[in-house]
Amino acid sequence: MKSIVYVFQFPILSSIFAILTDNDHVTVWACSMKDFRLGVNMAALVSLRLGKLSQFATRLTTINGFTHIKHRRYTKVLPGKTVKIGCASGFWGDTAIAAPQLIYGSNIDYLVFDYLSEITMSLLTAAKHKKSNLGYAPDFVQISIAPFVKDIKAKGIRVVSNAGGVNPLSCAAALQEVCDEADVKMKIAVITGDDLMDQLSVLENAGLRDMDSGKKFPSSIHSMNAYLGNCKTTLLFVKFQWQNNDFDSLAAGSLAGHLVECGAQVTGGIFTDWWKVDDWEHIGFPVVECAHDGSFIVSKPQGTGGLVSKATVSEQLLYELGDPCQYILPDVVCDFSNVKLDEIEGPSGTSVFVSGAKGNPPSGEYKVSATYADGFRSTAVATIGGPRSKEKAIKTANEILKRCRRLFKQLKLEDFSDVNLEILGSEHMYGPHSKVVQGPREGVMWLAVTHNQKKALEFFAREIAPAGTGMAPGLCGIVGGRPKVSPVLKLFSFLYPKDTFDINIFMNGEHVEKYNPPSVPTADYVKNTQPSTPEKSEPVQSGKCTYRLEELAYTRSGDKGNTCNIENYFAHVFPSRDGVIERRIQRVKLLDRCC
Image 1 (cartoon, rainbow, N blue to C red):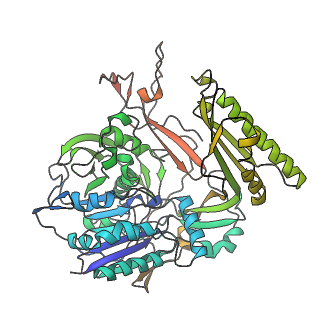
Image 2 (image 1 turned 120 degrees about the horizontal axis):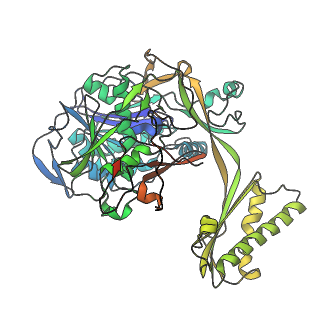
Image 3 (image 1 turned 90 degrees about the vertical axis):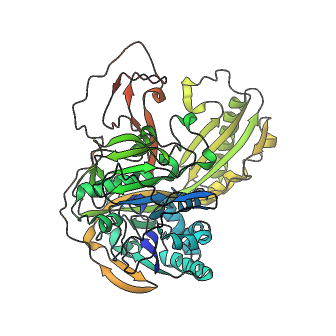
């Protein structure tokens, strides 16, 4: 048997990584979708031929406290053979409990890890500038793979991750060292092509504008990576023989990836009804089992904490979605407005059956996310106690700012470019709606400032501690000591023609082939500033009763670089937490968005 390790350069977030075992014939793909929508994202991965999925024994074994059962699949619900995928990380820094939980307790075919975001790419770029063999997520190598590499091979699990960041070749080299030390033989493949920094001089003169704000191309670009598209087939395409223009299947696969890409967010993490979720310390990480017709089931390993329900899946469906009728991805434009969610009982408890995703042709461009330097930031955090603590904190902050401005004037430095002050514990963010009328007897001063020059903020940082002896009594602790000064990185997103990208595949450090994307139908899309409405909305009812938003809707917030949004799923109107529901709305509605 041959074992294979893949490092893919993938959707914006550069590289995707996969360990494929027990295959005689290998192929690599390059995933399509932001933050990699799972590696399965099912809407991409760059081509290299894959062999048959390995077969597993039917016996039951117990390893490291997890019960491993082979044929634990939803054969009565999903038609035909299925592919089972577990996600063990939603961001760089996620918990170390997830990987062993999925390796030993879920009988998965693929194990995926998502480490990257737009800003993370910039941080990895900075690390690579300091040391040429950095620029990837070392946690993936040493914490997620090294302790389990022998069992991953023995179980025939394929691993997919974007941990390679901006330096997947170095990530592959580090993994090779792990494999050599464990005496495990694997092939390592790397796909490049998403990093456009070598084209910076051309792009600076291309007249590019930010696709959301219309701003001009910035002069201080720090990193620049594209969301690569479907170069040939995806993991599911190989298994189910889907076609590149089967947009409904692409949309369904993309939805599966979208739901589990952020790890425990779909299994009860940050759930609106948080008090209903048990055992956070051992929260189960998500598993999706996918069928050839695009339907799939969301579950978690048996015996783990957390919660999988129609409500938790509904919330994650909304995450960073924007317009549910026009969710634009590199390989497909998805319509999730008629997605259907049904709770079912399975081997691991309550699970959710998902169907109804539709897809349309993609655009002829890839989205590129660039980060650029925009001055510097420093944040001071200090505890303040005693009566009128809010008033003391506000006055202290304002006096510090006045002193700094006096110094700036003497040194001929410009003013702060931005100032943000909040008094934590006083309901400061609620403004006139605060219920702490008299103010608390303790609070936390949170003072964040930005400036175009680092020198100015170094003066600011030195003026925090003197407030403890020269201003109001009660300033009894500066959290983290003297504030640090760090660069501000912002996001600039633009579209760039797909046929201009140079995608290459490497195997074991050697160039294998240049990849040319397949020809598929494309379409032009106008970016909607408000969600589409596929049906005529019913008149809004009014009455004498008032409700908190959490009593009416399931809510999920998200962010894309500089933009934050709050999206709500109104599962019912006039709800009761006792279970009485007067009317259900059958489709997802995005009613509130705030930036």
